[in-house]
Length: 69
Image (cartoon, rainbow, N blue to C red; front, side, top):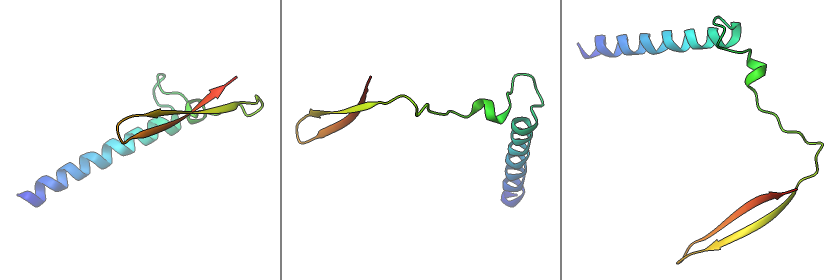
C-alpha cells in the first residue's frame, strides 16, 4: 500500500511539473508570457557606486552594501 501511494504521489508531481514546463515554454495560456519576458536583467550601462553600511549589535555585526546613484 505504501509503495502504491508513493507511486501515485510521484506520478502526480511529474505530471504537474510537465504541465508547468510546457506552459512556460509554449505559452499555452494567455496569462503565461514567453520565457524571455520573465527573465530579469540588469542595465550595466549606468555606473553604480556602493557604500557599505555596518550595523552593530550585541556580539553581531551586519554588513550591507547599498547602491548610491
